Image 1 (spheres, rainbow, N blue to C red):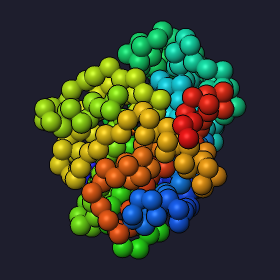
Image 2: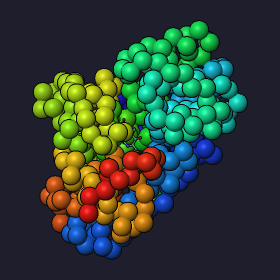
Image 3: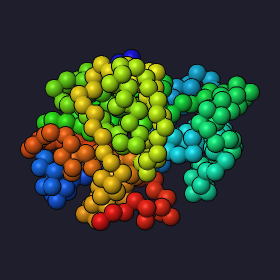
Image 4: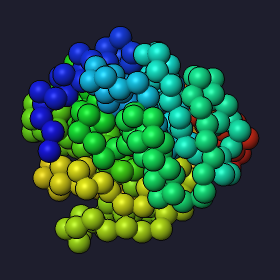
Length: 315
Ligand SMILES: *Cc1c(COP(=O)(O)O)cnc(C)c1O
């Protein structure tokens, strides 16, 4: 478990790295949802996703404790975030990516002076390699979600929502490994437990949904266009927090994610990741059982490979 104090510490630690992202609103979106919908816009965050929050909290803490090197295993948003923060703090970072990582992603890591190392095709191979490199270099391996500093950093999204939106009734959060959700749950439930927090998963990556039913960490094979949510199981540290606090978890189909992605692009002119479109899909397709309430949808990221946009559109 993490505490509200740890999230407040994270806020202090990361304030000159991460943006306080804006809240966007669309009358049309609110209308079709039957609720006031507010978009917490982490797609406008530095490096294009909320992952900078946890990564900077963990990397800065490590640097303060003498770390001179960091590694991570991720070709996606976490890898970019770790490379960005390490560069800011003037220490080298190696990011281990799969053999088939897209050049668009490896270029983004290199643009932040991160060293890219290719390794295998499974996340297990990459994590082992990233931990091995950190060991060799006397550095620190930065995990993507299952770590108190990462969860506390992601929880700062919750603190900002409380500052930015009055009379929030519910917050909708996408679930990969559950770091973002665990952090937001702690921030919200330890401040105002009346606010509902609802998780969203794709039907094709319903590991947390099944884990909650089974009351234990359960893994599945995942296959969804929402690539930030392909994690095969919730974390050992994130899951107990979800068990304790989560109000509801809803599932959305691939077709619903595509429709939400297209709707957001067309109506709000925002390019968001399919992972984030899941929260809009949950609101549009009436999965939340809420009416005339103030709902905040956490738009977790906006890093979309433009070569793939056509696969995400469904009008
Ligand atoms: C990582 C990520 C998620 C999932 O976050 P977890 O902390 O793994 O649950 C959701 N959306 C985007 C855009 C992400 O990069």
